[in-house]
Every structure is written in C-alpha cells, then in structure tokens.
Image (cartoon, rainbow, N blue to C red; front, top):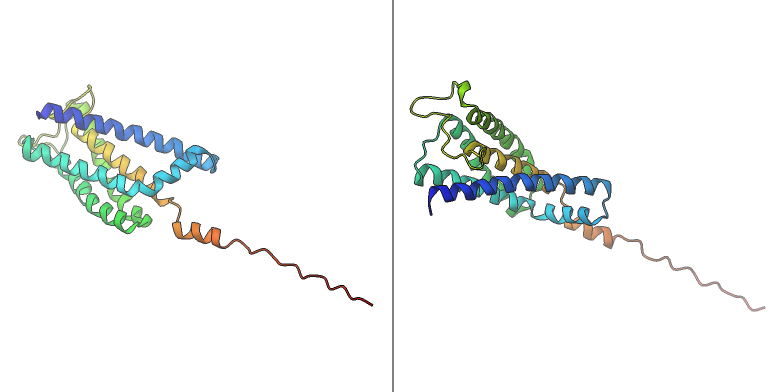
Length: 204
C-alpha cells in the first residue's frame, strides 16, 4: 500500500474525528435539554464506551505517526516531537483507564491533550501559511514542509489536532457515564409498600 493511499486513509479518519466531535456536542445538548429523549439515551450509551474509543484514537494516531517516520521516512520536526510527546503516553493512560473504568482519568488526559492540541494548532496554521517562518524550524528539520496535504488542507499536524480534540471530547463524555452500581441501588432502594394494619372489629 502506497504512502499516498495511507495518507488519504488517515486524512479521512481525521475528518471522521471532527464529525464525531460535532455529533457528541449535539448529543450532549440533547442530553442536557431532554434527559429522557432518544438522543440523550444514545449519549449515555456512548459514555459507557467512550474511554475505549478515546484509546483507539490515541493508539491509531501513535501508530500512524510511527508509520510516517519509520516506514515513509518523513523527518519529524521539533513541533512534531512535541505533539508525539503529548500523544504517545495517552494510548497507555487511556488503556489503563478503560480497563479500570476510571471516569476520573480525564483529570490526567485533558491537560496533556490540550497542550498537544496547542502545538498541533500552531503547526497546522504554520503549514497552511508557510511564508511566516518559525523559530522551531531548522534546515534539516523544517516545520513547514507539507509531507501530507490531502483535500487541500489536511496535513500531518491537522491529523494530530483532530485526534487531540476527539480524545478530549470522548473523555469528557466518559466522565458523565452513569454508574452501574448507583443505578442498581436506585432501583433496589425503592420503598417497600407499607402494609396497613388490619382493623380489628370488636363484637359486643
């Protein structure tokens, strides 16, 4: 499979991330407005698997970056390395969080993902407008070279930005997942019917 074919595939995945983020925002709004509606229930179903989906996004992004550097032999610049530093540990953290069903993992994921998204956003606009230059760029490791430029705007940092945003959205969705134990207790804690004492009729 050629590098161009892989680039188109990863570009489509990046666009799918943005579509997923938009869908999550719509479902979250529906959940807040009408908790008993169909979209709200779908949001709750999504929240139960959101950590696993976030792990898949981080893992695919990690493997994709390794493909470009180790197979396609694209030279990563300093900004690329900063994004990798932010992304690579997420695949491990999210795997552990998903296995433990730890909804509080967002405390560790969101700050790291936001930092990575900041570098990715800056790098994305730098590749979109390469004439501005950057102190991060060197002759041997240029930041403005478009190794990937699919659909006229999808670059490697744009793919990373898409993944960071998707991870943040998914872990925030997982934070609102209903607790199975609490739900069970909610049904079990229904008050038992009160038995009314039988009236005693005295016969004179």
